[in-house]
Length: 112
Image 1 (cartoon, rainbow, N blue to C red):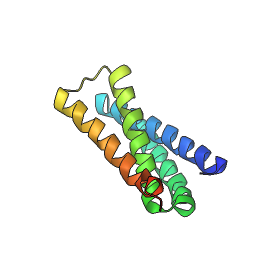
Image 2: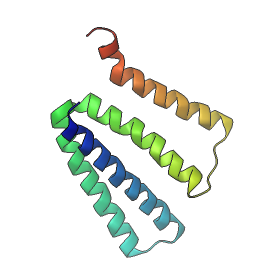
Image 3: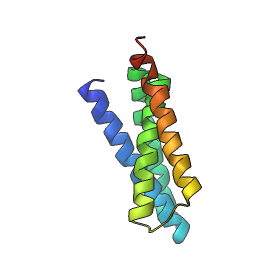
Image 4: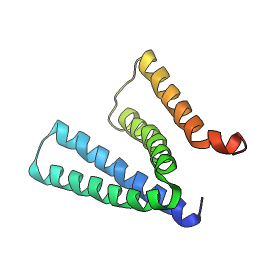
């Protein structure tokens, strides 16, 4: 992974995290400005993802983005918004993180 690619992945993650936070804020108190900002952030994040797909390939770019966002969004939901997860939900998230890690890094660990 190049430094540029890592920075783009970080930027898209932060933008998608802001967009998810905006979506939760809109859900709690809907307004036109909130939805417009949220849509703008999702659009910007997806434009960055297009660059990442070109650099890493579709499977790696979206897998990395998905697992990083999964962890980040859940941390915000739990720590900032005070949401909670049941034991099965927690296990499901852990399995999702593990599965994306295997999908993303399996070929590299297997000697391919």
